[in-house]
Length: 395
Image (cartoon, rainbow, N blue to C red; front, side, top):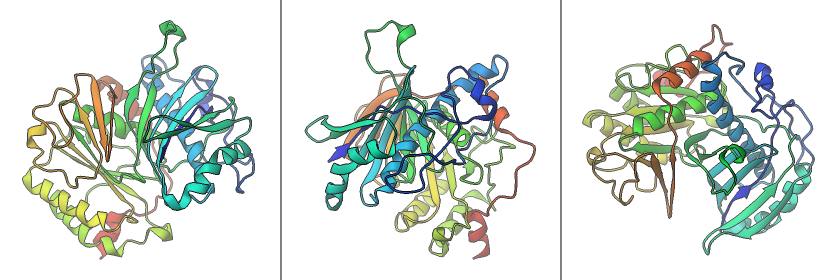
């Protein structure tokens, strides 16, 4: 059984962002005990203020909505995790901010041993999230939907869920455009899909927007990012506190990291997770990346995530692993095995095991990316935990 969670509203604390007209106001909170209402403060993270003059405010607006959509999904995931659902995995999520509420859809790959807990999940959601209503609905023959409706005013969930925004979606509506809800943001959870590929003509632009929005939502101490490219993305991210440089040559660093994977100790909490983005790799770098992914797949607890970006589908001789998700953008040359025809321009196809979803491409133009990254550069950051690069260098 697969499940969607749909229809919750959030309230977040955003420093100066609280004054932005698009946001849901309030201070963050969370519950400390299973089954109890959310009423205690959390450290939900926001890096930058949205009260910028035009055009900066307009450019930040989309990332703010994306970050708030991620926070809405985090509310549901907080409830989900409190039920001890460790074997069923969240594989896809969408959220959209409306005038009176936030709607969320969450797809879960259910484990048979947790069928009872999943059946009882609507009751738990209604107990923990004030004023919510939840029920299971059959979406298709293969999928079920958990629909959640929640009033505005519930605080945002804690950070660290590592939700990568990969697309947008405008649900069909007969309302005039000015009355329609904001487009839904589609997420792939890095905790489930630790290695994701972006392919096709808009792969670099789509991956750039996804990474920038992810960094906007996550604190520097929650996630470090290493970008291996020829300047397509890394040039935008210079000076950002999340960036963790390579310890040496790119291919050699990936090989060394793979060989040291068994020495990682994520349970200790002393190592900061790292996301490695590899953009348009040559044959040598792609081979090193594929070897790293193969080793990491044998160590799913290692705090390492990767994103592979390739523009020409004809250059994608093989994916690092056939079960890994792919985000296929339109206007690419060639086809990706197992993904069917490329989507039309302006669209993306999200391919995960047994599921294909077509949505609008999530991209920013160069000016928007520059404005967003400039806002995220800070003069000083408190001492950060070491990353796996430090562990690899010491081993």
